[in-house]
Length: 447
Image (cartoon, rainbow, N blue to C red):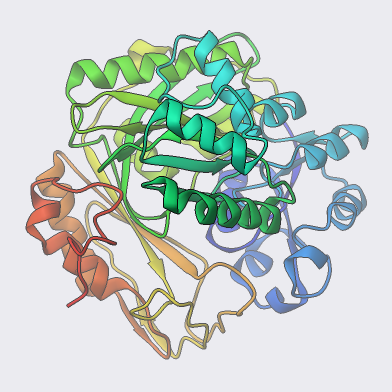
């Protein structure tokens, strides 16, 4: 086991990893930008080092500075968390080149699965269902027009190097194709430095359901069931729950088996998430594989009792999973609400928290890195925490989430807790009658 691990991230995930290190008896090393000197992760880690100015490219995305901090601190491994460098193959390569263990999959797996067209080909070899789409990269607008006629409108253009909902546009007809193609490509270049696109048949009213997997270096791969992630705004998840209230048990098992098959086919090691789009008939289609821990990993932990972050570290240290698939329990139901500092139009609202009260009580977990008096900087994501509730079934988990959201109080900043509560109180949520378009189409309209 490692004796010292550097966390190359910030916010609640950095705090989460520090806690996992403490549970394992590992010394934690935080890195922080100049804007994060007073951040919680920099305050509670065993050691903390400044790695540059506030802008992410000068600090949390600065590979050289992070590697130098790890070597200087005497860390043996680096945990990237999610976002930032977590799915950056060059960062994984730099870690290996400098004798540091990257707590995540191999550089090769990141490159393979990070290229969405290559991932689709791999999924096809693993007999994982795919939505009808292009055979590979759509090289030009003219090429896109040919594929669109072959597939049939509506179609979805997606960034090959994409993630996080960036570089995605839908064209419902030939008249919309040019704008969708150019906009998706431009957004892909801006976010990933790679404007290549591929094309899929657009699934109307899709559900976004994903499967959590764990794989060790001894040939063992298991799933921790599924998560429903369909409540999104602008392709960004807002509320997640596990398991999905939409899937039948047969389809759940089929989807989970496909996720494990894909991970094995890719030679995947560590924690990963296989994402699927699901139509109204419960047919599911491979979307992508995220080669990192997910924001919503906590709900999988709650329903199984398995510490995913701890196992990420243990697997990277060479440990073998001490359970098999038959011993992964389904203990109940869990729901997560992402708490963001944002206004009614989903625009970030940084500021100083003058006072706050976090929810508590049985079945409630709050993962956050904010505190009273903390000033939320304007340079990073607006998410300031996650409320997770667990119950014996969906009804109990939902009741506890309503209670928890009602108790969450912040003064000095604007948050989305009232909007989250309105969603939980809606008939659409109560009956699980929603899809990825439900916020945009007014199903969960703000009161």
